[in-house]
Length: 212
Image 1 (cartoon, rainbow, N blue to C red):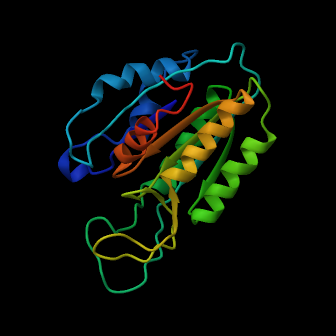
Image 2 (cartoon, rainbow, N blue to C red; image 1 turned 120 degrees about the vertical axis):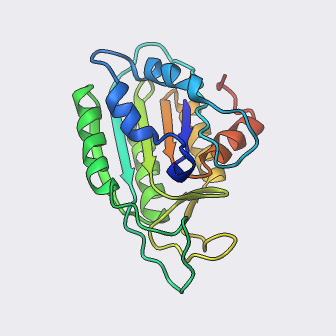
């Protein structure tokens, strides 16, 4: 399952994480919440669109349910270039904790990871996937900055086109999805970031086996 939404609120786009916290009803499967939010999808070509692309492929009875929340709001920027993309996201300090508590209230074993760089995020995801067993469910919920190509770590060097390579790239996320499919693990990837539509478009383009 892949779900993405823009954080470009100056354009009145939806911030996914607070919506998920507010809309998730007691006893409701996460898949069902995703499908209720899916009508918010905008099929325009704007890379900042609030793209909510929900796919589903079950593996029968779900075993252990674990969630990893990545809340990146404190960006250590180098250089003098600043614009609306480069600022800190101070609301994520509380929002990350709210997400953690929300997932725990729905019986997910949940860890909150704050202000990680790309290596920290990717290593956490890879370790969780290596420890998971067939039938388990993993949720990776990222909230923070995004650019063309992926999710930004907090040590990004900002430039006019693209930051330096402190980024979890879409190709790396693709590898995680493929490995999850091979192991029989249900993987839910939620990206609440600008340009998150590129992540869903990337996975759709490669038509990963097992995704609808």
